[in-house]
Length: 131
Image 1: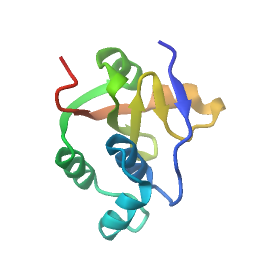
Image 2 (image 1 turned 60 degrees about the vertical axis):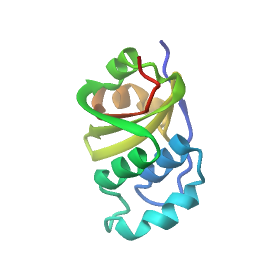
Image 3 (image 1 turned 90 degrees about the vertical axis):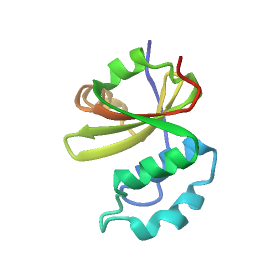
Image 4 (image 1 turned 90 degrees about the horizontal axis):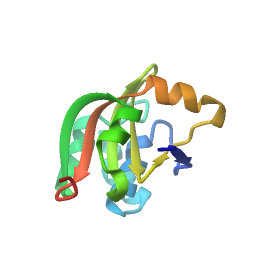
């Protein structure tokens, strides 16, 4: 499977959490930013517990595991959309994936390193979409 990338909304520093939540729940970026900005860290990140709780309140199940991005794409049917929480060289990162597309702002020259270095730690999927 050829993995593709699509640009994501990027308004604030370290706002990957906000875009992933908006895409996963079909709500507006500003909807989540306004509601959760009070819980952000000084650098703009949101603790993963808030992300997981928001996803669970919107009908998602959370599974912890350690996979490469490529392994996660082969293991899960991402056609209905999923959220991957990952670990990489610069810390934690949250992305939305649907089909064979990763919604993230990655320079084409860095895609190989991105796929190699990111390790999926948590997978969130909509209840009833995994057999």
